[in-house]
Length: 109
Image 1 (cartoon, rainbow, N blue to C red):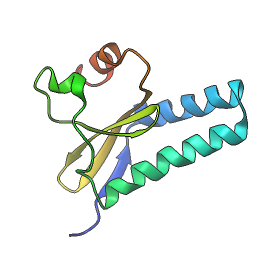
Image 2: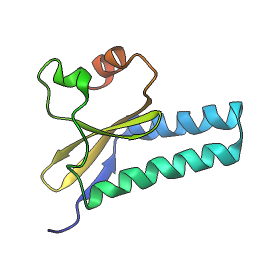
Image 3: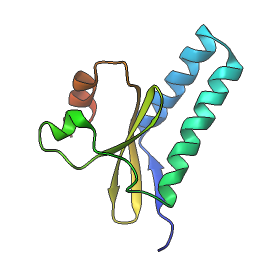
């Protein structure tokens, strides 16, 4: 099996920058760098194991099995796999109101 391609949507890139900025502003730049690098390492695993994530329960409730998620607690990385590409759609703090966030970012498509 050949490696998959991983692409981040502009929304996911914006999410990661926002997480980094928040941590840097409220904790330290070193902690922000660590979290951002760790999230990127999780995303890189999709190249070899794109189906490793679970279906988000909020989407399963409505019968949507198009997305999967993995965690770097408390952050959730939501992505979809099409053909040989994993598309990262959302990176969010899991303590947020995920129903609203998913409604506005995932289900509006």
